[in-house]
Length: 470
Image 1: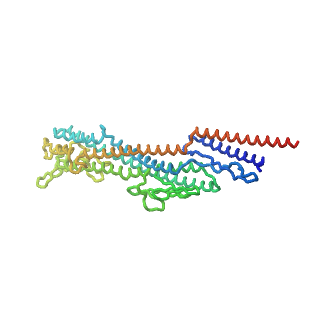
Image 2: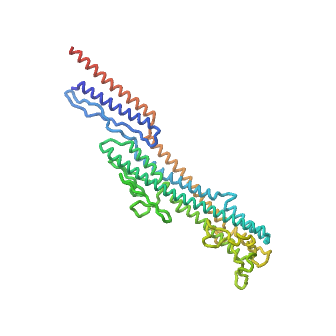
Image 3: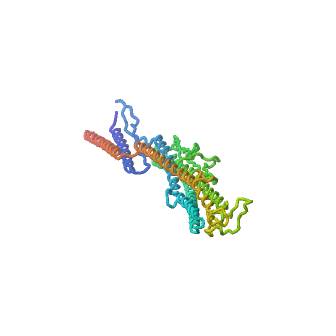
């Protein structure tokens, strides 16, 4: 039949178990504001009952394990939304920087500089012999070139900084992958004897969450406590081993995994979005700006070379039998190396002397304004200008950046909201509620006190038995 010793054993298991449950509740309360901490719960199980002459009686309670209130599905939902949220945020920031470089509409932007340039040719056509008007034409031409140079230099600097940022993100991905593998290596022996290494699992999940913002990942959990982190269908982390991302040196930039010659396509996340901006958006803008500068050089020089440039004297070709005639003085430097937005500049003769600016196409005819009129007309139409005119081509370039920025910003807002909602659902399932933990703490405290009462009752029963022997 049940003995007093058995009753004491039951009380002892109750005290030990309830104390463990109070420890876990206290740990939860202490970490209520700890980022990435998952609420833990003690799993209590009745111990194996014993059979005797009076029947089957219980032997107490035992702590089976301490579980984390974590759901893998909610984790995956958070990571599915956080990757595009981080990606669109990075894209929006970079495109916003490009938009800020142009800064249109602006009094010192390229649109205003081009307008002033064409206006100065119109003014010169009104008074083709005016040295002041020629000085203004040269000043405005230099301002156009300087604006192109400024934009191109800022875009080149942004490209350099962004590429450096990509290299930094790849280092971060590789570092996080190594840390996840190291935590896996700690979890395996920690859980080999049973139980859950909850703090280590929390640390691993925090690392995976950070990784999931840089690149989209899929996590495959294993029965032994380890896991596999997949990137682009390939294992980035496999248990205690990790592979590394490698940044290619060619154009466009590519990323591949060590041991795999094929590049990873459509990476996503902050890294993938930044790669796309460098390889596509930024490259397109720089090429568009170069095309605009090159077309301006070609169109302006073609007309200006046919004009009379007084400082050139008899240079050029003025034989009507072998047209085209003209001094052959170009307005912008025509060297191929200087035919980009970053290198466009005035030609040496024009830079040295404003009198070299040609107003007409007739030799020694101060009142001729044919070249100035033709150059002023380039404002509205130019054969090689992108978009039929320089103004239209530039507006199209700026508008494409602005629309891309707005679209990225809208998408970033949408995915940020989705990521927040997924995070809130996960927090509701696994986060610490102070009120719930206080209720749990009080419940286990009462159970602990009740178990101590059992000990007190057994003590009184033993005293009664001892009194009988006296």
